[in-house]
Image (tube, rainbow, N blue to C red; front, top):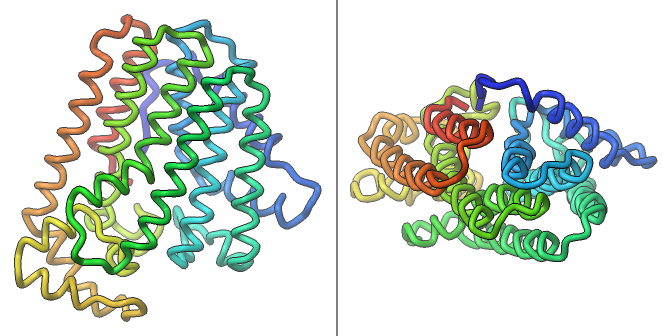
Length: 320
């Protein structure tokens, strides 16, 4: 996602977050240091720290305090990606080698654990119990989401409810937490906290659905991995669930198995890409997007609100 910065007032703060990230994940252990640096340099979008900063603008904004929250949320995201890549046996992320392909699964799992620990250490700079409780609950939900994703691999009998619950835990809750904890840490009112939490949730749902659509419609260069990777790995996403309404497509989809030659799946991926089910998935994504915008209608008309609207609209049109 490339947001054309309409404002420059956060550029210095974003740079401070980047410095904090590097300082936080630094380690005297060479492998952990190199693995963490590899992740930081892999081209992450940093949308979670951005949501923390923007949400904090609705309270008493203090960068020296807020930067720890922003770094924490990004490091948790990074850690979850490391574990994700181990589960999916992925060799590429954003077009670059994953930690598990650079080293091995054992190193990658401990690198992910190291990052989770570093995130909690960073968050200890914030002495607000409510923020810590929210963060703890979010991490628990992320773990449940990862377990569900493992359990549901190649499960072609799952329904839309299962999918939505999974992406809620996998993506939406961390974005929602980024918005809410940013507001909590800055002392924003309870009503503003709720508005931002709900905005983040609905936006996160839209964001993940768009990710799942792009897995079919974007090029390998744009994705940084082969198109259709989710389906090949047995992850049943919204376009696939919708496509299974067509019996001929369903027969082909349910014949996919673990270890199948990706070349055999390419014709099916192309069929789904060209089908009306992609358009239907986009419609559902747009519904969540519109709900997210509605949640922040009553927020004060700060520059931060305009930026939240701009980011939401950009997510709906992104190409990677």
